[in-house]
Image (cartoon, rainbow, N blue to C red; front, side, top):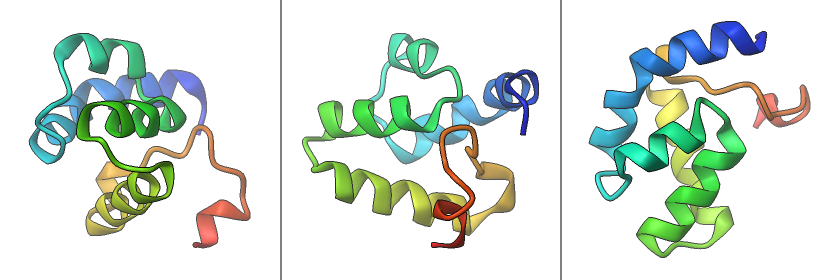
Amino acid sequence: MNQDRIQGRWKLLKGKVKEQWGKLTDDDLDVIAGRRDQLLGRIQQRHGVARDEADRQVRGWERASPDHSLDDSRSPADKTR
């Protein structure tokens, strides 16, 4: 997925992300800007969880709905998890 599509989809996903991880601020969401690695870092920081746990949560969230996918920083091998 190219960066323009990710950023466009991000605008639609912001609300869903905020519903799932309520401690994230609007400023956090602006910094994340659709980048999965940034989302993981902010979830770690705001929710006090380890990176592995943040990744597990995001993978579960992505699996729950195909519309919630943030593919930009995942390698093809990661997408099979």
